[in-house]
Length: 293
Ligand code: GLU
Image (cartoon, rainbow, N blue to C red):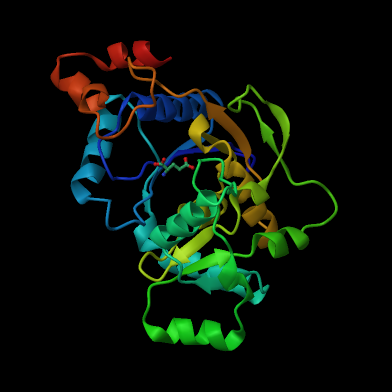
């Protein structure tokens, strides 16, 4: 096979049972890869040890096998590759664009509530969470060293403005063959600034989703990222990290979300739409395919 062979991946987190939305993502990746004579990889995104459980990983394999999918071996498990994410973080640190920050989610919320109580509006990221206020961006080398030595929990954040400042003059873009929330496709201009100073790792969780997904897509030679539209805006951060770390740019396809009968996005806690629930109710894999494609 030539080395231009397309490589697709399905990258679930084992923090719950797979539902119809995951089935759509997995089937789309698998079928498109096969049709293109490419490879289909399965990656287990299990960095968050507080939420991921081995029984959910077993259920992922069972559900995907039942759907009739097969994938390359070995399966990459992110928790087994923490050194790769630490190396990427160290490179960004060497560029002077990361800093340790101790402000917790609760403290950020409180600061936002205080500002909003006096009529100030607070910027939100594309997922609706308030942006980190950024105080610790200005802390001195001494203050940073003291925080790291203190034993307090902290996160490594990306100094977004500094990071963007390192990009060249050409706009940061990606090629989208699916559709964004308002139907966007074609060449999309990334807007990483909308996310503020994103977290890249925490003292208690060695890598964030953004950092590990970007590193792994490159390490595994992923040429096509096919995933749900809920991750469309996250692509801006991934493109920024790719550019900073000199990693290749995959093509992107964000597919529609499978919605519940109430019109809302499916969640892993809603067992009715779980692939396993369809299986135990006597449905066939073809029935499930017919519901999603
Ligand atoms: N692990 C992510 C999830 O469970 C998906 C990552 C991706 O496809 O980029 O939603």
